[in-house]
View 1 (cartoon, helix red, strand yellow):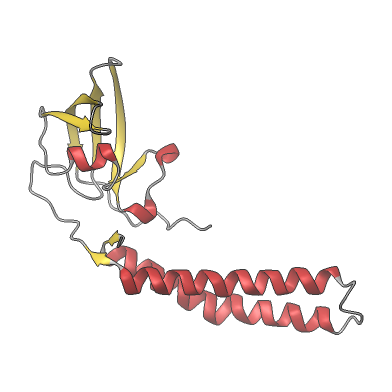
View 2 (cartoon, rainbow, N blue to C red):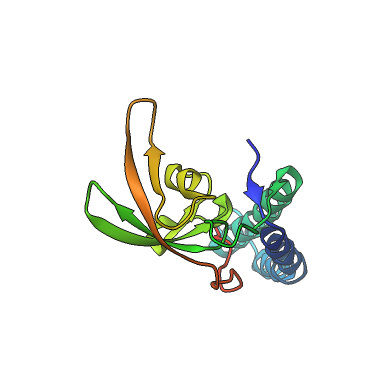
Length: 167
């Protein structure tokens, strides 16, 4: 399965790769070199920790490059009155009689604890391209689901303050 990413996501990932190659890689190599100079490598904790950090950085670079290579680019544009990427949406849950606010984002930036839901999540898939006051069925699986009502859509919130999650 390909991740759906926006041009902005790709740009941020490329910036992170560049930073990791030019800054983090240099620091990691220097740390390995310094630790190696301390002598016996079999009992040298600093050396093993420095190697682990270096490998973690290289792994992250490979991961980001693969994400970019396999990504499906999606537009973050939507109709004037419909839910789209990077919109903040107020959703009323009928079963719970509660209203929640979410920002609709791509999979890589999804973080439900921070109120950012993916367009590939059940709720995200259900509400995208719907309008204010639409009653939408959110399908969980073949037998279960629930209804929500879209209360408001805020298109003024940009994505420049969001950062791609690090693992």
